[in-house]
Length: 277
Image 1 (cartoon, helix red, strand yellow):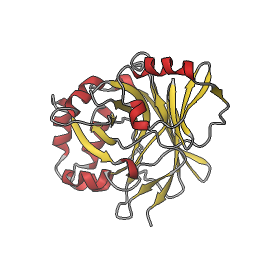
Image 2 (tube, one colour):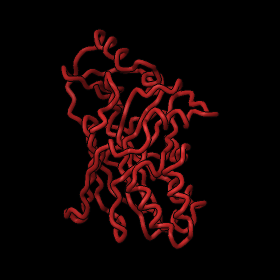
Image 3 (cartoon, one colour):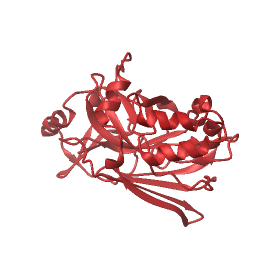
Image 4 (cartoon, helix red, strand yellow):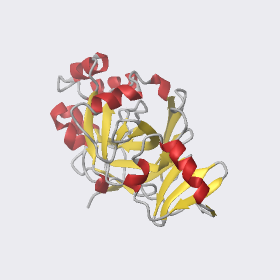
């Protein structure tokens, strides 16, 4: 089952068709434990609709978006490489092995980009990359009930210069994209789920890669448990779970590049690149 936020309401996609839930705030609809069964029960009172796949908004209400770092070995290696001149490489090695994960705030809902919208690269950065990430949605009680695709845009030269610059490297307008919808399965997502990413420039493919999420060092429940320590999220929260698809060191995004991230069962999130004016 997939939930899409549209201008007309919440579009529910099942194997049997599409249904529209009108006049229901996104926050109230998704922030429910056992969401999959509750939505199935509600379908009995809804009629099927014809949907052309358009008019999709970012699947978010007023939730915060957080992110986890260095959860894959490739991410550890990339962070160590970019920060070796600053002497901070040892910190990325340590956090990969530590009990406590790296968690950081990524975006407010009003800064996020949705499907087919622009993501931004910073004017004061020379090394900008997308980071494709499986993104969890957990309710206010900490239950993982859904999954979406996240693009954790990153300015690698800023973070590499000094790890204390992480908020500037990671948090700015349109530095996060999520979508296209929220995948709400009856069981947790399969550990062999594949994430793939393609980047096109002038209609030519300049990057392509894929990886299974079974390469993650940390479990989804573990990350959520640490996130909810000492914090509460009244309408739930999104958590990007880290990446291991990192373009080679000489690659940086340019304006008008197209980024497409696909995750099994969830769909494809496509965004184009702009520099904020």
